[in-house]
Image 1 (cartoon, one colour):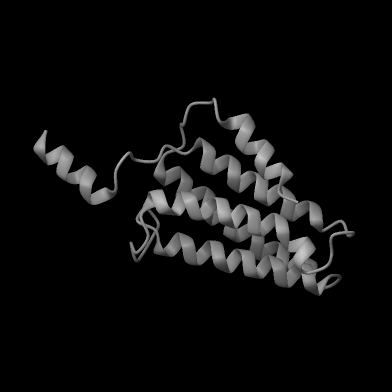
Image 2 (image 1 turned 180 degrees about the vertical axis):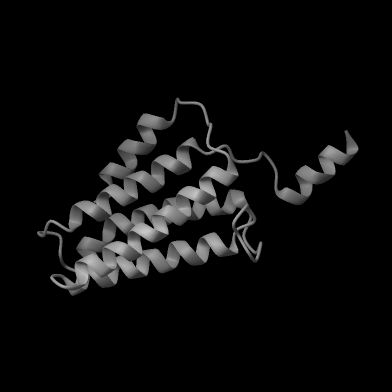
Length: 142
């Protein structure tokens, strides 16, 4: 189930973090779009996969809108916390085929790949050492 997520995390651990918060936000919204487009695509032949994709897309959208990064609207979740929640979302995505009982169907591949991609983006993102407020105070003091 989450072996692809673990493999992606392990393989990317030694690489430098080069994805900016703005690029991370862009990739998050692309991920939301792919989840919703897949939900539409899956609807005609696999309603369970379509529902799972819509749930993942809605969760990713809510997370993105509530995050304190470019593209977020509410700033309720810090960018560092967003990164931790991303790991949970990646695992949730990879677990959806088993949870919705379509693990023997080809739609499973989409969810496994999405989970691995979310993990990879999270591992390659440069997160600030401190929260936004503390980082701003540190800049002003310097």
